[in-house]
Image (cartoon, rainbow, N blue to C red; front, side, top):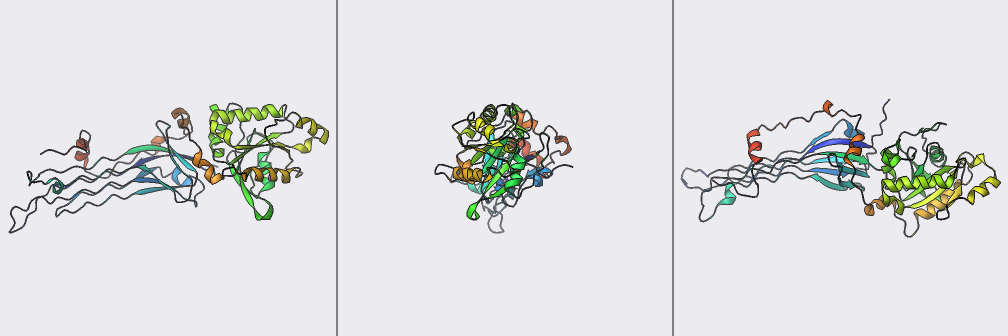
Length: 391
């Protein structure tokens, strides 16, 4: 059964074209030389990306992948202005990033509820012949066509907004920890890659305070190059204010495992190294105190470390204290604001396309425009809108 958690989607967007200006001469019974009175065309509709906190995934766009704004209306006689095209708003969850599907170039992102960014601008409406009247040209018999529409295939990626992001190898105990400290119930099993999609839990703290923890599928060495599930879900921890590295106590080398995880994050996006980090050694119910002290001497000194066991509750309260201190430090960014200074890197077009390898774009061909003014579109291809149309 397919999951309803959709964190990336590819859509085709088209703005509206501008309406053509009117070339009309005023006619009245007792006014044979009424002069020009053609109105301007209306502007084409714009396409906007808008954050909406009522959405949690991009599922609503999975099967509605064509977004077309309205075309501007043509100008009319008596200097009537054409109708402006209808704008289209694409509502997405907070934390969504837009990329150009063909080049992989970063376009924009929305993080706060109601934040709106223009993806495509509609074409300007053409000027009517009323605008071209002058003392030396009192009866202009020409007008401007409207500007053409803009088209773009856009990839939308959801990056979760959470305070703490869990980073670890498969079977490190991440899902068990989330289920132990929050009301979230991710799947827990004794085989690798149990978690196939991110999960979020709200961790209760003292005095009715809380913070949000996000769990992503396990990372393996080479994830930054596309191995395993890591590359697909690493983006979900880009916005986290702090990172919690989880390494099990029965690992061959805890310090080396931490360095491998840190290296994968750096290769994916070096900006992640600026985030605050905490190292938790999980599954400590499998070792005794003497072995725990021996392991503590081999751990990195430049990062807070805590030994925990989600099964017995060992070290969980101390882990919450350390995470809370890091989240509320003077120089610590808030999760919702951490991305304001975060630099989004352009994605490689090949890797961006690989996310959609299981998609068949031919299943949903782009519907044709229902405007029957095809001759005008052919003329616009060779027309410079900034120049006036000569008679």
